[in-house]
Image (cartoon, one colour):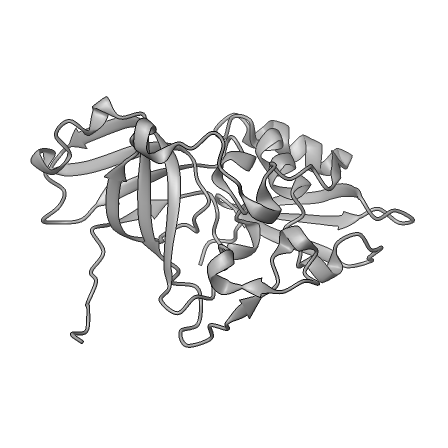
Length: 241
């Protein structure tokens, strides 16, 4: 068997600076949009000719934040509370024999400018800087199966946490939304899905969590005496290095 070497055709720019903050599916956070920037020699208008005729794309990408060689035959999907094991091939777990991912995204614009090619996308579920190996158009008659059975993930997950902002955090949102429209909605939808490990969910906690979104560090915690009420404490820009 010949070894296969893959080289990225581009990288994606997203607001998610770490895998902790990435939603488990792209359509759960409407403002978490992305932009694919193609690399030479693939950044040619010829390579994307006709792509604007398609409303959605498949992205084949590299789980580059996952340590190689750590795959297991069974995994604990968060949708099952992290307590039940299923086969790795019956899940979309990141720890796989080959670190490849597949994600569907809305294509909003194809931009060819100054010798560069950018694909402006809708909501995505990828860490900022993720390498993209291939792009394929979504074809509705072949790719859509309305009656498909989806096992333990048949329905869209329910919102797990109720999110509110402290006065300092809300004032920061008002300040930053001048350049980042819908920042409050974006932060709320990310946290609503509860990015914590499954074993921490549904339990009281005194811990203060931090997530990195765009150029901000967002700090939040579970309100005392509750298991599903969150207060966003602080929103600060990352310190310049």
